[in-house]
Length: 509
Image 1 (spheres, rainbow, N blue to C red):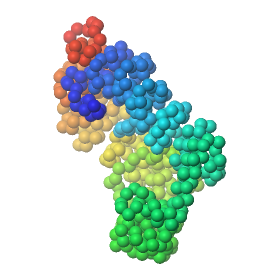
Image 2: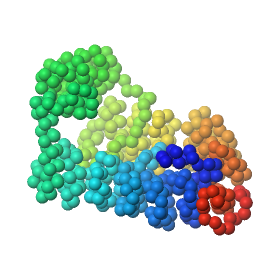
Image 3: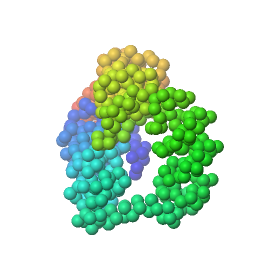
Image 4: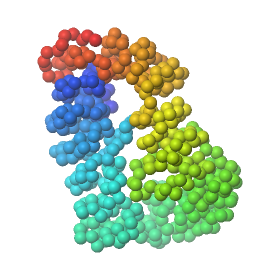
């Protein structure tokens, strides 16, 4: 069964226990009893959706059910060192889930596994590559894989052939390991074929597919291949470095603005094309040209471009420090008059304090939000301002930043925006009556968050345990008495297979 099917198959009593499994105040004994039960839905949320105490982690790693261990392998909240304990699990299902990065959520991003664990995966799992491991590979390890002492790790590092330093590429064909030599030779051969117009022509599929797209974007194109692709795939050859200048000039005047946008992004765009695209009738074409690296600030300012404010702003990639812009380039981006260049600077985690303070007061919403999303020292006032002003899909991620102020958020409990009313529920001093009122809010997410607030009055908390929609959230409330947790387990003991033992009386809050 898929996780969705497991959740859908759970009955009301199981959903309440799943809430208990997520309760941060649940004692270790309660968590261990839930882990020992037969409910897959309860074990799934327990092992996958929360931080677990050490003794519970020990029990999960030793659990006889492979699906239970695989749930923990996918836990983005768990310390990577804890998940790494599953690296030699006897079941392939568990190891496979460990090798693929955990899903991210609104406030939790995947973190790198220990380097030794990634090396172990590459050496023993057979088919895993850094691409499949995703963000679980640290930038430092990813950068040095092609020179690693382990031949299998070096072989995996060859997947990033074009990103390797020239001296590393030169050494790999003479590697002492035959597998590394063969992989290096194959990667070198693919690179050389990509540079050979005759080989590109020979390899180019006639139908639309990933291989055709790749070759037309990055391959060396002969004149006849360019001519054949011009009416069919103009946007692909518009960005190809080998496309002849006369064809680029034609594409710069192409009737489709998407094609002209791709031309505007060419690194080697000539002055004539830049002048033509600077006055293009399409605003998106002008915007694409306005951030061209060949332009100075005066030239950028002469272009009539507009930057939209209604998009979603996401986390920047996990940067390898070796590839971050230097101090001068970082400063140039941060001080640019162009919002999109300042947004690039705002996503850099190494931005110095002076530039952080400057961009925190930037006039562009995207700059402010990206700074709040990505910089570890984003100011508290900036984070709150961003949350109140930004309504994109990644808004709630701002609440995961440690600098977001919690005290005083109760003042937003009556806001007309349900997202802002949710913000009030992060206030640890929320008045009990306000928490009670918000469990009856028109917005289901506000009601759900209110049901988990520790200041919720006990009578209301008890009533919510019988609410079909909010019972799991109420069961996850840290104010739920331990006696009630035991009572909830006792009521489904027979159905879930939970261990017996004396329960502290009937359910009472």
